[in-house]
Length: 347
Image (cartoon, rainbow, N blue to C red; front, side, top):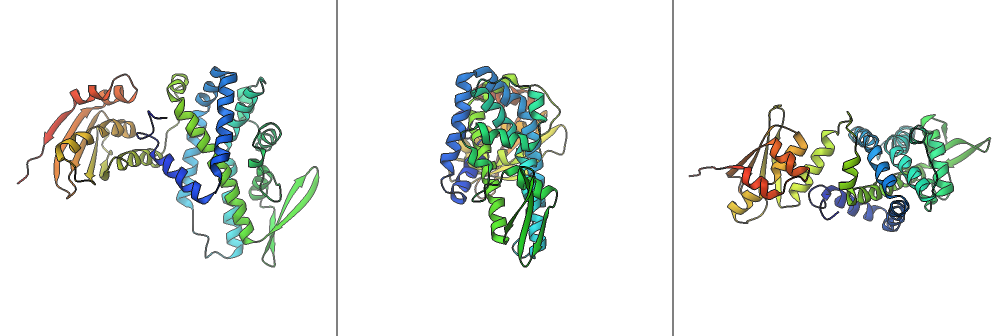
């Protein structure tokens, strides 16, 4: 984690601080889930690493869907109850199945490794959501995460209610219908309680995602060796978040980013400090590697602006050089030898 903490994980630290404020005591649950990963790794190191590697394309797809949910999100504050209920139900379905299912699959596999149970990977990833949730309730040490409280409804029940629109509104109360052991049950909640159910489901997703992220980055070098090439792409929103947060954590701001040209990507950063311009400009040249990871362009340019907006230095490099550094085959000292610097003349 130390290796990747600043380069790739700044957005994760920001998210952790955010959810700590929103959900008190969430650290304890993250640690419990993280402990399961480490226990599985102790029981069967190779299988555990393989699970995370094999599920990487599924996590990528879930992340891409999550951005769609975020981009289409609307403020619910002024919605009438009917519209509020419909939008919230959509959120429940999106969170539980769209964004969280790959994490739930991973938890099922991790807990099977802990218990020494064999499994068919293909069968698990094609399992119904209800079966995944039920197995985690029965066999994980954090079963409470997969039910809402105080009603003890399974997340899969809420997914079914939302996906099948099995609810009706009468006198400001939302009556939700679900099946329980062959019987049709009803839970009646008000507007605030429905909002709370959405937040409880979101809290579970945040916990699973944080534990997955921390364990994944802590074992990234091993996981990378097992990842198979696939045709899944990471949405620009995710890549840009990683790029921008890493750059801002080092005292720079992105002023412009152009990667429309298939042969070159150009990044303009402005210094947020009063540090020595030459040293800071050379520091900014390291972002050539970040720019390559974001754009995968054969030619890369980073332009450094002082705090007052004056362009002082430009750094250029070939993508193949940055690829070697990004993959860990070469150190940043190798990049320093290959970068072409151009000091911009000023009056």
